[in-house]
Amino acid sequence: MVPGAPELAAGVRGGMTDRERLLGELRPVAFAIAYRMLGSVSEAEDVVQEALLRVHQALDAGEQIASPRAFVATVTTRLAINELRSARARRERYVGEWLPEPIITDGHDDPARHAETADSLSLAMLVLLESLSPEQRAVLLLHDVFDYGYPEIAAIVGKSEDNVRQLATRARRHVEQRRPRFQTTREQRDELAQRFFAAAEQGDLAGLEALLAHDVELTGDGGGKVPALARALRGRNRVARTLINWVRLAARLPGVSLRPVEVNGGPGALYLDGQQRLIGVLALDITGGQITSISSIVNPDKLTHLGPVADFRSLLRSAR
Image (cartoon, rainbow, N blue to C red; front, side, top):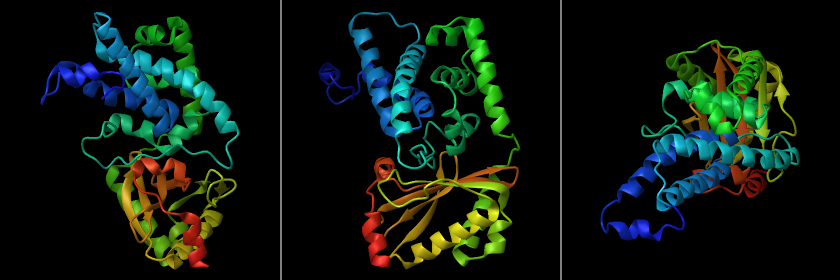
């Protein structure tokens, strides 16, 4: 329900009003844009609430909205650009490495499921998008992920069409330089992930190294709240050794289990304590048949939207 909309509920008791149905259909559209723009579930939810409230207010004011979908995309993008500007300052003060808030994309009704938009959800891609300006990020996502034409995008971001094309070209070049396109099929990817978790669990250093790209990167995000890597590690030997040490530590924690899931459209896993509370999320980025980056998110603030979160520090104390 959109805040400040009591008359929605009053409209039809026991059934959905047309207005509620419309807002329900627009919510995943708005979230898909806002989350990719911001890399934060909580910030995206705030933007979505505000965008839906504006749709509601425009309809109340008797505005004729020819395309509600285009209207909500415009409002969401503009709000997300503003939010991203203030988020930038907060992220510069962030303790340790900043990673996006992960989402679990196993659900079949998930708006993120569609293969053509799944790649834009990967944690590696969202981190890469952080290096673009807010306008570049908006233009690239709207054009390359959501299929908006340049004239529409120009109206959304309030720039000329030529300007928008230039922003898109620069953004695309920046992304392509840093993200080589070697497609791995879903089957190859899942099989590689299975071998990765098996090798890590068995402490098989050589087996683990064989799955990693030579310049693989391991990033941990504890946000200063719980222990994590102070900075990203590179190189297959260092990364493999660190992972095996982590698995050995996890094995000493009472009742800890690993549940493979799809994280941000790619293979990953949840680490859970004995009460099935979340300790952390691990996500793998696979390119060209090798694991190119591994993200470990243990900052409890970035996990609360996924369910109950474990007390990581007390778990570590009990292991010692």
